Image 1 (cartoon, rainbow, N blue to C red):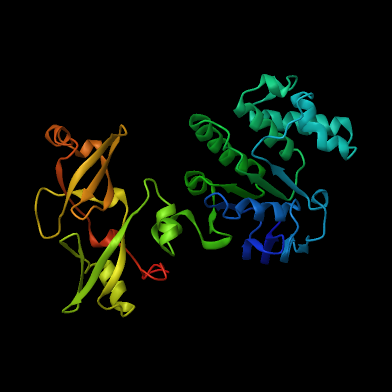
Image 2: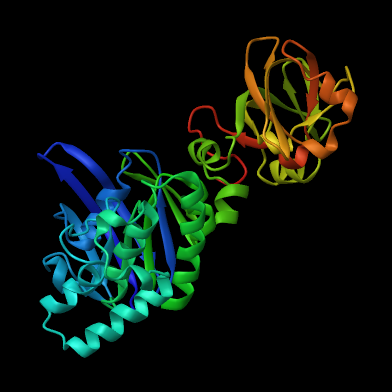
Length: 375
């Protein structure tokens, strides 16, 4: 088992294209860290530098206190699972899993013990004599994971291992990785573009954009206290609604003006704004779809909208609405909260009034895009 430390790590291609900027992170022994972000943000490049598959342009990578910048991948005591499985098509499942152990000239009885143990844990014992072409995508991914497991490496690296699977299989494999992590009890570094995977798997999440770290925190921290607008909009599905608004401080109390409505902000957020000495100013206001509620009708704190699209998701309804000035918002309403009459009135073009409370508002600086309360 091992800790991993990245200090001022940088990756530059062709002396001009910077893929990763000044990456700093301490990963504790047995911690499950997830790198998440959109395509091209540098997450896989960072993982490959840890693995030794990419040269490091600057900074240092340490595994278990040893700088590994100049070590070959085979000498770093890491195991890696790739997106494309990378199985040998002419070998059986057993031989695929055993391959790296045979390269190390491990005794066959020990190889048998490790392979069969990994196969039992992963539920692929019945497939050990099959070739990869006879397996489903989920079974092939288990074989790839088994091949990494048998090495008993210090650090387990996974590069978008579920991206080639369908939604149902992804959910199943995600649960299996959680159980696998408990059994192996080792250090995991996992790369994904899927924020659901990041939120459900990681002890901590590293959110990246354009080669920079945007925020590092637990799933709860990045969801409830996003450091900036990018994190706020990236974490959460459907994504957070964000729009320009005016924060007003009047007679010691705060409220927000948006779309012709006046929304009180003198609760918990008002106290935090006062502590930070925030005065009247323009802000980008954030409200998650699940925190917006339907109002009974016109009111000072209600925003008038027109319903554009009604998405019935089963247990909830996603309402795509448009304000008078043309701003599109998403409202997420549990189906159980809607009466038959309300459901009947959710037709395209219907007038809906929406509102939300102070405790679920997020305030961002329009220029820096930092969270005014927690950035």
